[in-house]
Image 1 (cartoon, one colour):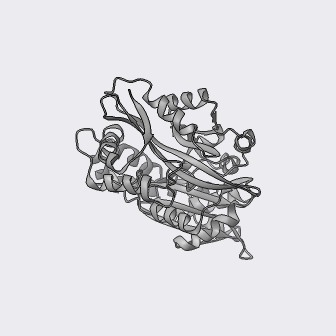
Image 2 (image 1 turned 90 degrees about the horizontal axis):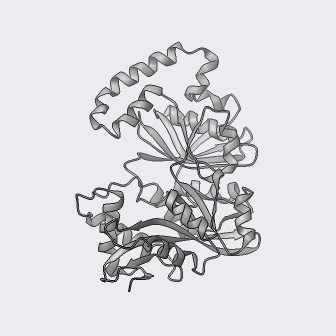
Image 3 (image 1 turned 45 degrees about the vertical axis):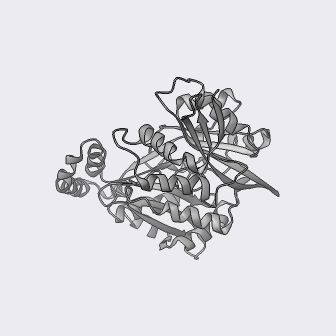
Length: 370
């Protein structure tokens, strides 16, 4: 008989192989660095909890045929202290003759002792399984956003992901973008992300370090009814991991302050000059999301980014609508809880989730593990 049980150290090589076949190159064995990282991420890190463990599906023959990676997210809802569980990599061996393996994994995960469960990477099939188990899809949290800064470089970056030799056209793209910018009227230049956007409003953008960025998270998220409640060690771990994404480029931490010096926002993104920058987190006090997004666009333009890509939150969505931002939906954010009040906090856009309070901070995205 097949079974679902907690992940053990001895399972890591099999899980790494399954991860490699599912999400990376199935023609190659998993590199040792990937095995080491999966062991740390799901068994040893400060966000692991033995009561809310990652799970493996063991086939009747004894082989591991499925896996769901789980990390814990401490949260607070008013005076209540909660444990949220983040459902990360859900995968099933495609050659396994067991179509119910994924459903068993998800059902066992959702039946755990956590107060609330999330995923921000649910594909169409996973979203169906969540909703059948009384989960709720959250459309306002489920969009990726795209902002073009240098059109030619933006298109070239997209093409180079399929055809590596496209990078040979970098000089041509840079020249074409300079030409296009020169042809723009003065009132059009702001759409290219000119840094003067923030100075004209009296705002100040200051690059900071990991500790400085961490110190801004609590004051910039306290407006949310349901929000993260990390320990200092947990938050430091997340930010350290989030900064190590060499495929995405160097991590940039920055704060935004008003003319009187009060912090109104912050952002974290990864950038290679001439490529689309990956935005992991945007924070803003109520009423200032538009100004913070302008500062982000301008700052990334100053660093040579071709464009920006990130994940939406309801608090940012309205401000993005007037800033030539496009939206796609590669995956859904879903939530499940036996406590309807907690689910409603997210349905009503009163919960903070995605970015650092989600899955994309870990190095499974943005780290080649070669």
